[in-house]
Structures are given as structure tokens and as C-alpha cells.
Amino acid sequence: QERERQRLVEQQEKYFKQVSDHFNYNSLGNGTYDQRYLITDQYWKKGNGPIFFYTGNEGDIWEFAQNTGFITELAAVQGALVIFAEHRYYGKSLPFGKDSFNIPEVGLLTVEQALADYAVMITELKKELGAQKCPVIVFGGSYGGMLSVYMRIRYPNIVTGALAASAPILSTAGLGDSRQFFQDVTADFEKFKPACRDSVQGAFQKLNTLAQQKDYRRIQSAFSLCKTPSTPKDIHQLMGLLRNAFTMMAMLDYPYSTHFMGSMPAFPVKVACETMLNGTDLMSALRDTVGMVYNSTGQLTCYDLYSLYVECADPTGCGLGFDSYAWDYQACTEIEMCYESNNVTDMFPPMTFTEQQREQYCSKRWGVAPRPGWLKTQYWGDDLSTASNIIFSNGDLDPWANGGIRKSLSPSLIAINIPEGAHHLDLRESNPNDPESVIVARKKESEIIAQWVKAAMKESS
Image 1 (cartoon, rainbow, N blue to C red):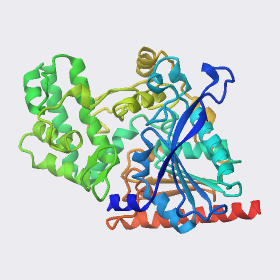
Image 2 (cartoon, rainbow, N blue to C red; image 1 turned 45 degrees about the horizontal axis):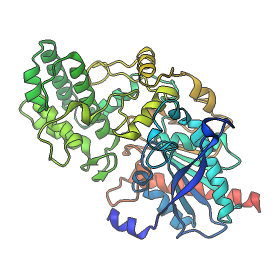
Image 3 (spheres, one colour; image 1 turned 90 degrees about the horizontal axis):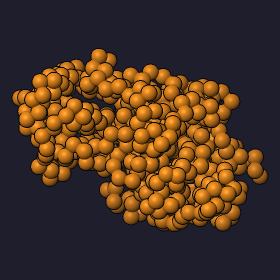
Image 4 (cartoon, rainbow, N blue to C red; image 1 turned 90 degrees about the vertical axis):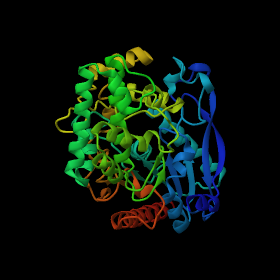
């Protein structure tokens, strides 16, 4: 069904000659790089329909395009041109090719450079396409949703409005409680059944006891590890890998099976809890549960601790491959994620990630010192009252939701909450299994966007 729709929607892959450094006129060879974008013009009322622009985030742009069908569905109704832009340093948009993650080349990976990329791209493409009069609405999910907010407040001359889905603009700017994230992951499992939380917590406590007794053999067999762990570092890595699986299942708790950031069955939280509660032995039940994330194909015979999960400056995980280097660097510079689990307000082992730990790690890994507070200074944090035309949508099942804006701040800064929604469910294409709350949310979003576009057209005519 998804493939069918992909065939119907023609997304052309193109490259845009982009400035490497927007803010320093003689740095690093004053060069350009090829920035990838996808464009769909089949629904566009040429020259006067709006432009729907997805502000790409931390990954390959095709991955986002294939999981953000709402934008194309909306474009079909509103006669819009659709552009998905890839974020610098991700996917194929590497300013220095395979050297992009060397020091100092990685230094051009910042939020402000990425926003400037999008501003320049929109401006140039509008000229090329004869679309000067067409209002631009930006869309994004998660970090991409943060970028959509920032585009509207940084370049309101270019962007008419923003739909920011599941955008944790507060918790990544150092605002809020460091315990919130893993507390909310836990709440998803607890809501399904309190016994589910208890069994996960029990399994981690059992693992902890074995680790303290240095019973590494038993841990290896219980979790089917390829190598016997032998140090506290290995155990810490195992705990991180296990905790991360629950984070993924909570974020991707959709009412149908998906292939986004990995493969998930429908209602993964429910499936996980049933697996936890049906196991005879807590630890092997825990192993089988995280297998949903790390062994969805069932082809692995054992788990390699260090290749399946990479610890980084984001305690919720950076992913794997080149994209994970880029996100790690961003988490070491502007994006603040000092989130901790403690086994009291959540079901996970106590694992801290303090500002001091972040500083030490980032200095060692990238030779940089994070600048706490800088993101808030630049992009306003919770002091958004002078902004306008932004929708903040969040799903109650999403552990990122409470790191974002949950109450409307003004008639044009609108919060939409989706009780049965996980991580930016509203951006996904419509599906027969959608809960009523997301159908209502999408309808509201499309009405507001249509109003913004209409008002902008009036102004420019």
C-alpha cells in the first residue's frame, strides 16, 4: 500500500548548489556543496499554489519523505508544490564528502547553517520556478519540527507558517526536568499494564545483581550475547542497548506496522508487554522483547553489543553510520540532551548523563565544549510570545511530547494534542487504522494552513 502510493507520487531527486559557510566569507575554501532535495510538482497550481517545504532532519531525506505522506496528501488538496530538503551532513548532503566528519570540517554543522541552507534554497528555487508570489509553509517532525519553528522565527520574511510535529524545543534547550524523557517512556508501558513496568524493572534489577556478582557467563547466555561481557563498561553498554529498545518502541508506538528507523509491528508497546509478561524467565523475556528492535528479521543468532547500539551524546540514541556521527556532533554542541534514568521515576537502570559527563565526552570525541543556553538564546526557548503562525502538535504516547509546547500560547501559536498519537503520527499518511484523534488533528492542521496561505496571498496581491 505504501509502495503503491510512492509510485503514484513522483518525487524527483535533485541537487542544489549550496554555500558551505553562510557566515564566514573566507573560511574553508569559500566553497559550495551539493545539497539533495526531492520535489513533487504534480499537484501544484503552477505559479500561485503554496510551497510545502519539509525541513529535513537527522537522516537520509528519502526516509523522511517515505514516512511523511500527510504533506503530499495535503498538497493534493491545496494545490501545493512539495519539497523535501536534506539537512547538511546527512544522507548524501556531505559538504566535504567522506572528510565531512573530520575536524575542522565538521565545524560547519550547526543549526544556523542548516536554516540558512533552507532559506537560500527556498529563495533560489522560487526564482527558478517562477513562484515568487507563492507562500511557503514549513513542515518538520522531531528535530525537523524544531527547525520548522526556527525557520518561522528566524526567516519570517521567507516562511509564512510552520507545522512543528513532536518538536521538543524546550527539553533540547536545557529547559525542563532531566528525568522527564525516560519517565514518559516508562509511562507508555505502565499505561498498557502496571505489571509490564514491574517486570521490566525486575529484569533490570536481576541483571544488575548478576553484574555486581560479576556473573558475566550467565548474563551472556541470558541475553544471547556474541561475546561474554568482562567489564563494567560492557555492562553499561548492555544497559544502554536495552534501554534504547524501549525508547524506540515508545516513540514508534503506531497502530499499524511501520518501517521507519527500523521495522516495528503494530502497537509495539502492547507486543512488548505481552512478550515481557508471557516469559517464564524475566531476563530471557527482556531479551526477546528488545529483539523486536534489534532482530526484527529474526536472522541474528547472537547480539553484538557494540555494533547494534552506539553510545553518544544523546542518551536516547544517535543511530548508526555516518548520520550518527553528525547527530552526535550536534548533541555535543547546540542540542542539549542531559536526560537520565534512575530506576525510581522510571523502570530503567540508573544511568546519568550530566552536563559534566557531556562536557568530558564531547571534548574527547570532537574536541568541542558544549555551550549550554546557546540554543535558548538563539531560538527563544519558552519565550515565544512575539512569534506567530506556528502549530505545535504532539502525541500523548510520545516521550518527546512533554519536552515541547503542549498549550496554545496565542491565537496563532497553536498547540494540538493527539491522545493516541506517538512520535509525529500526524505527519504520516492517512491509514485505515488511524485513531480518531489524529484524523481530527490533521483536519485542524489543514484548515489552519489553508487560512495562512489565503492571508498571505491577499497580502502579496
